[in-house]
View 1 (cartoon, rainbow, N blue to C red):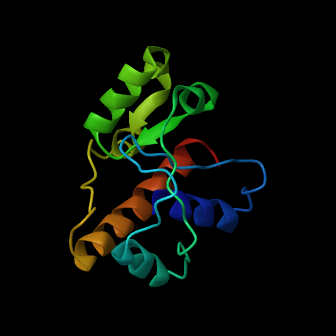
View 2 (tube, rainbow, N blue to C red):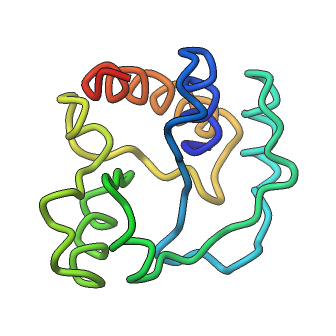
View 3 (cartoon, helix red, strand yellow):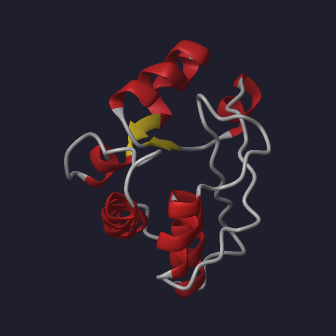
Amino acid sequence: MAEALAKKALRARGKDRENQVMSAGTFALPNDGASANAIEAMKEVQIDVGDHKAVFLTCKLVQEADLILTMTRSHKQQVAMLEPGSIGKTFTLAEFAGKGSDIIDPFGRSLDLYRQCAAELRYLIGIALDRLAI
């Protein structure tokens, strides 16, 4: 959801051509699709994630990234363990936005929790893009 919301926000700002966004999971099963609740929550904000395929986070992806934003401190620690040189460019999204530290992962939970997560992501992504002057 975060990737799709960030791409939509960049398009709305006319900055999607010069900024690349991708998501990768620390426990993702490669090529897994989005959950039914994620698809529904995104559909409600006019985003289609039906074709989404999960990507597993690798050292190469971490090394190539300019900035890594995670949902939780645990994810942030997993990135640092994978690639210790990433510490200076890895933050939780809420931390980077100056609004806390963790976002509740809705995986396997109710549609309402997916909606709440999507709203929080949308809010924090907007702040993060402002901070990046994008």
